Length: 469
Image (tube, rainbow, N blue to C red):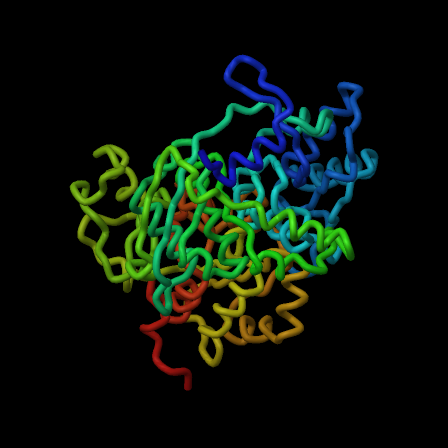
């Protein structure tokens, strides 16, 4: 019987069966950020242990950093500066690569790893962050862990893991004009629910997936954790190889040619079997927006807020609570709902291609009166490249705040938030209660939909915009 892509990577990294349903797995790369990474490094130091292989470990400042222009170590989070200082000291003491605040490579951990080619096809990679699955878009196995697991991985380059089940999601056809990878991700979530993946590793495949560029694939894989997946991956192909070529930590010269030859074998065999198979038609994917307090609470723009009978993944209590929190009711129109703020950023949608598409919507237009609009590039490199293209000028002319890179108001652990009761449309990945501040009501959408909504002052698709003056 043929093997899945996941099985091939897993088998290459299995050290031993521990006999209790778990296996010891070799870890190739470890990513850390200042909110949890410093804790793991300090705990390791206190225990008298060292990082087993510093060359495989990378740390960045992203979660609690101030993203306002002219930032320093000072943060809006009361203990944020201590997190930054502790991670800086521990990383330097351990001899690992640190992307500090002034480093041109600094940024959100799941943005800088692909752009630096820290993640490569066939590798295993872990990070104490739930959206680590993003990086499976490059054809490796990446998953989120806790700080204690990070400490173990740092000391031993291995982890004890229960082998997950497998799920293949095939997306046939092509996405319609105006629909994006974010819309596809929300479309899938609306169909299968927040527990739909059941802890499995998802392999995305099909014509629509192969047609996506790498940054769009990263967006799709990023949202797999919102379906309860262990991780997600996409078989590497020439699109991935072209993306990785020449990047900082990619193999060079003869090693590059040898690596690409090996990577071409990283695909599920034609007769490979998956525990679960799901199929979607890309032609059915419309621009999406969330209405509730879970990414599964998403519908196409133009559709109404569903009643309980139309929400198969909810209980009566959870549905009612989501509606109450969002100040909505079943049958309410989402398109045209007034907003107070718009946010473009996060590890989901803050890469250069995301900013280009949003800028194309904003060009020659201006944010509606009373709407606060913020754009936070995903990395310092993205910011610099966007500025070289003049994208920052488009955002600023349209009335957006243009920020330094970081997680920012994807969640308010950085100490900055929107005001209670405000309705925000956001390119982020989670719309949980109080995710962007206590009492804030978040609607998830693509960067284009966020930009169009900011201009009109209400939730809207770009097609609703009049031509710029």
